Image (tube, rainbow, N blue to C red; front, side, top):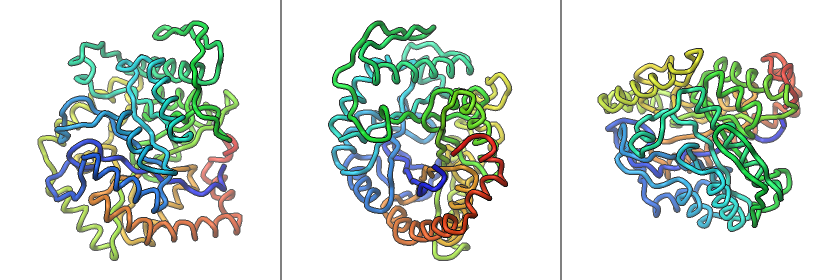
Length: 381
């Protein structure tokens, strides 16, 4: 798995307001026509996945939101190779209904549908819809049952599951998802930062998404998840969020970042920060997401600036490949001006990444770097 080329995903801007909570100009649109054009451009510029966001009500700079599963299917129909991940909330979906929807989308798209199971941080999205808001670790326990249920119904002709939140009795879903070499069912992604999230990923998820992190921060998470996965004879792959600002000089890129933060929508950022930190503090050990995020970090609402993908193409490519030596398999990217920046990435940055990856592989340095960083010691990957 370590020698596989890095994969790339982008945040689908199906929510208004762009990917930064700032009043800076963002030549990015949340409409379907714009996103259809973007999806085709992305798959032709080296992107493997797109992740459709999920929000249900106006909040923190996002006044309007397209629903994630229907939007994802529309993007699948508009593309040929791109895999599209729909973010979904247990508690707002009955898992059998979602399983049926994803199986249909997977059949229609030739095996390109996936889900990102979001345990939830925004209390109002549940309570204003009349649904209960569970305490932090209970949300992850529900999500683990949700994922186990999906696996069962997608792979068994007599699916059975009995949990505290969900039950399934001798159920045969037809049609099943498309048969694709190398995967038993549509890929299941999961986010989170807490101890409960990491343990859940090791037990049941295919992919673990991290908020933006520096090199040491993501290494800690990779080791924790791999250690748990090894106890269950499983492997998990790792995605890392990053907001990419590539310019011809580092000074130009840093100036863009400065302007984004200087023009931040302070009220929206502070409101978002208050909500997410309250949710994270509810983790049993207080290690939930966003707990050490500063104001500037929260201007990109998944800590994307912290990954450090800001500078020249050469600097960004070197940074991306450094994350590969820490066990990262996929970079989930956001941009300021999507159409221009995605094309810039494909033309100027991705070729450099591939050159650096080839050098790592032929020199044998990848294994030594993974071992030095403690990644190979935990599980094969």
